[in-house]
Image 1: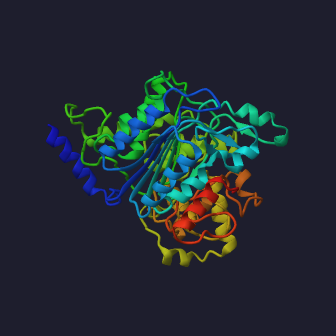
Image 2: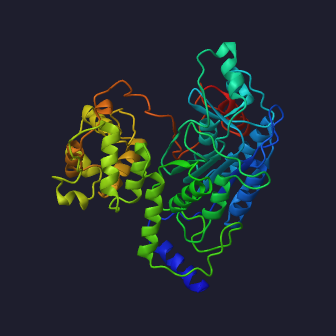
Image 3: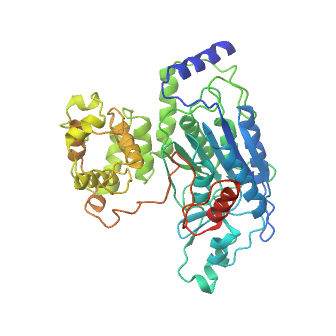
Length: 469
């Protein structure tokens, strides 16, 4: 039976043409609990130890740390950034205090002493966006897990500081958008606080990650569905992990059933038919987001299951959320040429559509209005291609990232939220903050580029981690 399960997992892995199996796997795993200026947290150091063990058991080179000061955390990030160059999969896991100030997320070393917004921005905290960009940008697949949505004791101090009259310090973390090849997961929804769990154990979120992400033959997005369900059940629906993904292929941390410490033993589990297993996973996914008021979560379901059982319900909820109450029925398949679902698009077919810059802007605005956020620049860059692919996958069209005449016509026929389609106010600004996570060399997004070499890497990292974005 054990051999049969392993064989089935291996077969499923082989037939998936776009499956990501890493040759080079690296991870950054840190838990900060022993804070010096606020009460200590009970579990982050335990959480990080459990996560590091799971990742090592499925082949990751783990840069691990616990209870790190700012300087020690910076050193670990520099080590991780160097190791992640050219990695097939890079994982970033952090448990501890985090804070969102004016919509930007920061991680807090144990020696942080935040009394004002200036303390946050001038070095006491670590900017999450810049950190991910400068340490993981070379990796092909990037998985980010933040168990940092705790009730933060620094928030009241920052709000009361006279120099920060207009500062916005929210509970939990602020929403983030993932770039291509990236999955980001929070312990709970943006602006909400997560539970620590019993002292001396794991938090509900980390416990669910440890139990699911390295299960044999489980794709990472399916694993995250199980994580959401487990945390929701364990907390009596008081906490629901949140995520955003732009993965372009299937990612298996344990595709052939290698050992995974902390994961449930499935060697004696009955073998189920693939169709039933797939339907169970889809049902879990749908249950976790069916009551959501976030368009991106409903779109995540459509992307994963473009012809899913609950497609029509998801589309109806998206329409209601975007356009408000309406008596009109919205059916995205009505009047669509059947060939739209089979005819692949490429650069040639897109050139034949003949879109000028203004028409490309219109495409981008329409995508944003449908819940697929993208900047309306009039340029179809890598970011735009990724969003087009997500829209195509959600509609059941061949997902190439390019348009043809049939797909362009189908897009024009969709009802777009008037709040997004008619507004050009943010044409050249991102609809949300994004961690780009694209390929290529890392860069420092402050003034000027960091010089090459070890000194440049250190300067770029220090400036990027603690500089102003």
